Image: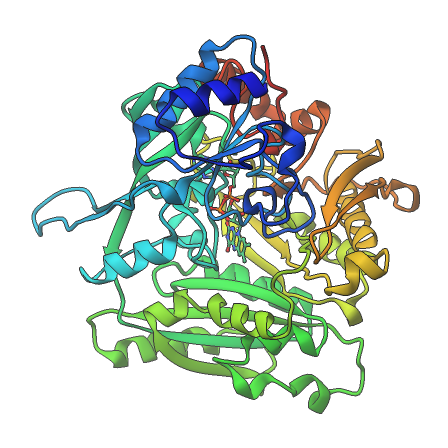
Length: 539
Ligand code: FAD
């Protein structure tokens, strides 16, 4: 392998960053190596080389070279913002391509009044959503489907789905793409859309980076609202909370955003203190029962050019229908930019508390509507609610806003409404080095995964983790099934991270055969996105 790297490094125009001393893999276990780590800080896999491409052609040339070098086992991972949790953008001993090195391209097209179709943005795959927002707002436009956090890359979220409180109305981000430029595993540069090379287009959307590297995407834009009425309503009853959420997502003509979260303890509200300061101590002042779980629905109404009084009226009528705790409804008004960029305030808060650059044993699950209460019970039985650090998001989305041809996986029941639950836990800085708490969090995640899906994580797997000082540790993540009655709730992991083929097969269910066929077609040597641990590199 070192011969390959020497060959490439010496004979090509690529700009490799690596140890000047040695091309061998051992030399790359460096803590300064950002490509070896991600937001999760659980997996730590060094690449042998990092490519910072100056052009799309360089990526194509690299993949062509690797495909033709049949003696080599090298793999390649595109890295967007590196905000994966489980090493998905890593390439153990392979090559990481830093997509933010490609020249940023952001072109906005506003459709004329009489034109059919959409306004759109043509953006490079490594662009961050915050950059797309800033540029499109200059033209009075904005994408309509978002993620909660905007410092993620376009290519990275389109490889998953891209979901947030607008998903019930506009579908995930992958439902809002008109065209893609992709480089396949064989180095072919392809422009694809629903009508041209559609198999590649749909395969790449939600395709976990398996079929090609997205170098450009055409994203649907709409007129941007200038202001947002942002409401939080609190509940002490889970049934009332979910019933109201389901009512709200059936009112897509009136409501622009619906999310929800669990309030397990006072920290659950800390990150949100910027926009809603008055919430802060309501638990302490409202109840002596510290183990009471509350729920919060978040709703947004967008102000466009119509009169503010119209939005006020719609909001008032909508809020009147809610079955929440009447004294615990809070409203604020913020600019559209601040609303979409709200998590950056939480980021600042967590950074200040030393809780941003820590391990993040997150778990995201799509859950059938009929099983959401059972899932919530499973979750509360498994974690320790009093000490949980981080938000637990729960909100409904609508299946009819997803295109079944994409590679994204949803529960296989037939109901139109389903839930996304995001258990976004932070581990304290001491967690990895001083106690086995990270291991126990990962075991809890396994228990919940086993309880909610048909997948039995029977094998004990060892993973490499990095502590806050960058030191490597080996961690055993044993299955949690011993203490849990298996009860397949029909859930499907989002941002999934299985490591065995049988688990992936069950995860994809009826979509597995098509996923396999697409892999054979577009990346036959299984070079791309090894960090997803779905396929092993072929010779
Ligand atoms: P990376 O971690 O860099 O890559 C992820 C995967 O995509 C890897 O397999 C990689 O090889 C592949 N990839 C990257 N770029 C490309 C490309 N150009 N072409 C092909 N494949 C590529 N998700 C949501 O849906 N909604 C949310 O609200 C949300 N909020 C989040 C908040 C935070 C703080 C964090 C850390 C994550 C959040 N996520 C959310 C998850 C996020 O969407 C995914 O982790 C996404 O992959 C991150 O994008 P990235 O650019 O960091 O991807």
